[in-house]
Length: 441
Ligand code: FIX
Ligand code: ZN
Image 1 (tube, protein in one colour):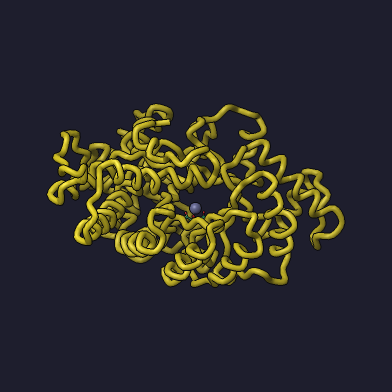
Image 2 (cartoon, protein in one colour):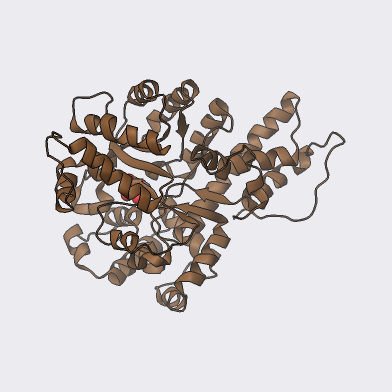
């Protein structure tokens, strides 16, 4: 973990940080700046079984399940028959005892255990289970948020989820640090299933989109927006996503989703490039990646200039073009190093590229955490990469003839970690993102 130093640093006569202090100053600020985690799959304790935490959840993360099958002979069908603790035992034994946890996802578990003071070389999960057994959900949430220095979290909220929706329907007051994101995957990717579910809820929609479909689907979204007060609407899209295209998705996008976003002043977040169920036997771990067409994003931004888009793309090959697109369209905000990109080598590369092409006008990372404890590692690892990249960039700037002050570094990091997102989703009325450095809201 990057250490935050509290002693004061010497500054030069002109107020800039001396080159000897630059590394330490950047590390300190990056470590201490709270993060607004703008895409996760986390839920607060009020959502009951959806609030996942603890060693068994950590070890059965789908990133690790995919890795298990590379180092074990167990067949996927056999694996799915095991109880969750047995799956976790097998993953620990295979990836952490019989192999060295060098991959990013395995190292992540080590980071979490170390931060919690647990044995990272344990032969079994006995000690870890004992530790988590004594934790209480609310208190543990506070502890994780403090260690990870995360003060706001955006969930992923599926309006068709039978476990999640009753909590929304009950109107239970949730933790205000957890913000909703209304997920549109069923509507935009599996219309017939979504239409079925909506008809069961008495919305008059048709499979072919005729009749009152547009009006009724808008009504459905209006009602969910009222209920959840989402920060944005979101969808994951396949690598062959096109815009325009002759499809139900296109019609729903143009006639329903984009007008609803405009009316409610909400951005549409698009996560592009996933190839779902490449290996269905692996379930959630069986999705893959494909390079997508950035021109589709450009056309959307151009034809719908009144809309705002948050975009992340899954393929490494798309990153440079996406930066170029963001230079052309100010209604496009690039975010995160998603999923298979969330490895230090690639995060560093992409963050460098973005900083060079977009200055600080992007959102470098989101955690995509599914298990609360993952915030600890995902943000610790991300902070390391961001600190390295920023240090190099400031150093280059100094060499070029312009020093940097501590408050400028604070302002930049606050923008990257929270300010840009807050401003994009209208949470901040002014551009005083640097406030986020001191204020834990
Ligand atoms: O669509 C998404 O939000 C993806 O992030 C997930 O579906 C994916 O399974 C994941 O967890 C990636 O990190
Ligand atoms: Zn996600």
